[in-house]
Image (tube, rainbow, N blue to C red):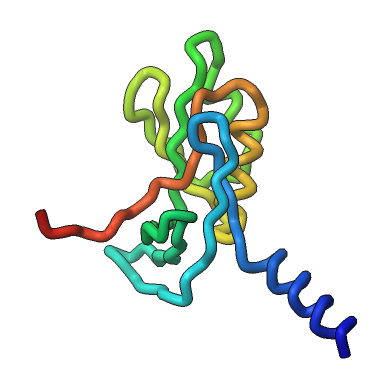
Length: 127
């Protein structure tokens, strides 16, 4: 019985969390069972260690280092659209929604970008 509980806990802990890099440090998120459609984009919600609720779509924000050919770097990934926001910042859409975290981590770990993370949607708050 104990082995089953330990195995179940291990499997749930592997599938429940996602992560991305923020300021060079890995940040873990836990998926919340909330899902909605926003302007023809599906949104999945996660919470961070502070309990802040963050939504993600199929977009990643990427800022390449100054000496990097960002378009060449991005062409190595499975992307459906690349929009140039500034000279070094791009908004990219991924083909497979479920790979948004692994794609953003892989981009950051390439060493050619300053940041690469999902384009987060935050809840509106009253001031």
